[in-house]
Amino acid sequence: MNILGIGIIFARGIGIDSFENALKRGWQSPSEAVAPHLKDKKLPAFTVNLETLADRSLLKKTRRSDKFSKMAVLAASGALQNSRIENINKKNIGVILATAFGAHVTTFDFLDNILDYGEAAVSPTIFSNSVHNAAASYITSVLDIHGPALTVTNFYFCFQHALQLAQAWLNEGRHDYVLVGAAEQYGDVMRYVYDQKLAPSHDGKIRPFNFRPACQVPGEGAVFFLMSRENSGNAYCKVENIRFGNDNIHTPSVDLNIIDTDGMLADESAYRDSVSSDIPTAAYSPLFGSMMIGSAFNCAAGALMLKNQACYANPVQDNPHGINILKAAQHSNIELIRCVRYNCHREKAVFHLKKIDPKPLHY
Image 1 (spheres, helix red, strand yellow):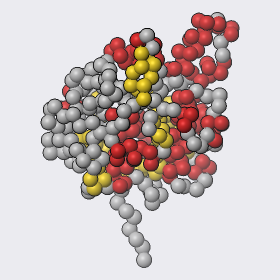
Image 2 (cartoon, rainbow, N blue to C red):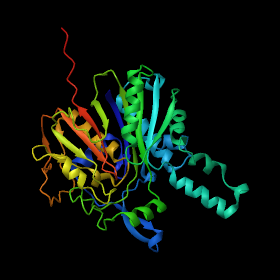
Image 3 (tube, rainbow, N blue to C red):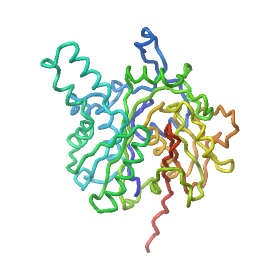
Image 4 (cartoon, helix red, strand yellow):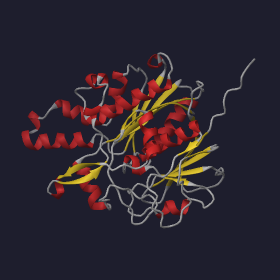
């Protein structure tokens, strides 16, 4: 299936152009967020500031939604616009949202409301926004999409499962297009869990190639892709070979590995064992933060590289194990990129991004 459009919102901006600029400029210090469990001490976090958006027209349509849904709607809208397909919202489109934790901030707000005011006085709006499928519903209503909308939840592989489902829908001819993406939100409770179970980075740098001990900086954002079996002529790349498990049989030779090392595993040494000395490796989590949906952001990075035929340097290049990493941005002939993610059981999810050959000219 082909990626025809990409929409994204993350700590450093909105839109695929903002993400491309971040890839070119490299790491920048994240903002700071208050950590209530540390007596309101401020810690680095890659958070999204919706107040700085220049165009607030979509936010007016989602004024009763929470931040999680707002980010999902903005990214999904961006993917449709980026495809440059006329009247795309009138086409046969399915919507799939992937998330590990869903609207957990709103869920905890709802629970706090019960404790503070009792079950009879809790806000129905907060309750409705806490439902996992609320964000997908906002996408369809705000963007006037009339196809089915599903939410896929899985801690480590939610985006990969969403890609697999999107591919099935397209192969079966259920839809002409599938809007598939992922969203995650920063929250105080999740920050507490991260800091208790994982090693926080106090200087705001995720060091992907340390592997162990790993360090995390929480992030939030959303990424959406408009997928189709057809090539509109402006496609980024193809997504193929979505696989789970550790079977490496028939693994094609690739030009670049993108690994999801982001500090979300206490021991990320499985990534070290999965890369090769003769194939360069990249990890872009220092640009957007530690998230279970980091694969979606890495997919966007890979799609940009294939379309632009340019490699982007690793934003943080600490490399104690001597891995063959991308050290500088450069134009390159890239045909195939492998994106790899592991879970805490060292189980692997892989998908490949493939360059699309230009359409032949007819005279």
